[in-house]
Length: 143
Length: 144
View 1 (cartoon, helix red, strand yellow):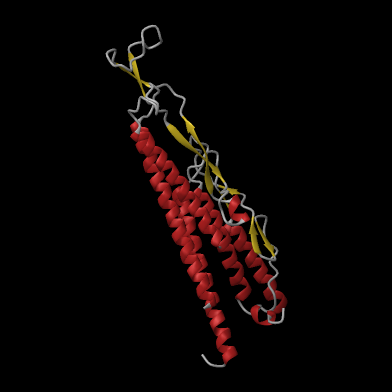
View 2: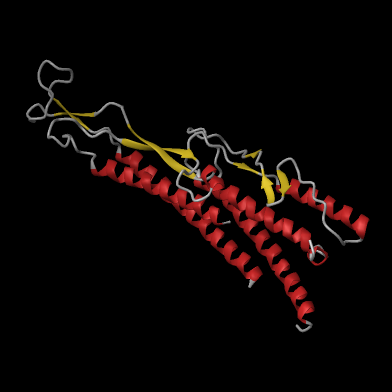
């Protein structure tokens, strides 16, 4: 019965990682330089969920639950902003000359995903509450 | 078992099976909720009516054989199999909701409803079980 809490917790952890990723995407939606200061815009990241939980405490619970198997970078096109005076504009002679590349983060999509993550997190909390009340009920049988 | 004559009386075996079933099914529902946003995941459940029908048949057989005494012979169903450690579930009943773009046919409202109903069934069965146990305790101690 304790394994059931692992399942709900794995769901909560996965949704929190998703929320972290969304927060990072939104925080970096105008980041056009990389850590070294070169023009290399941030790419939107998204989490990939897979059933099963490698961190669970029992064999049975390892087959159930969910975990984040990968965090992938979105290879979609960057947002282009016309700004030929910017020091980070694409140089003459390259494609899109005179444009500055901005991250391919769309804040509407991120916000919708955030709402979805919160709802899914709440559903897992409700499942965990139900598990707790079942455990308490089962213990009352003995006492 | 030495005390099997006590633990097999009356409604005890039926209640035991119901509690085991609800506890196992809760695991399944929690798994389905944890995978609400997993692509390609399709929630699966076990058929409650199938389990209830098989249990009702077992109860009828027990009544006909030993007038409601003795062990319950529960053969299980396609999805529910009795083992030495309790019941084992093999979920096969799929969700019938529309398929979303991530190829997951989740149905959060129905899943939550299933969870609440399952919890209520667990509560009811374990409350009755507790009543029975208290009665047995009272009989053993010869005072209420």
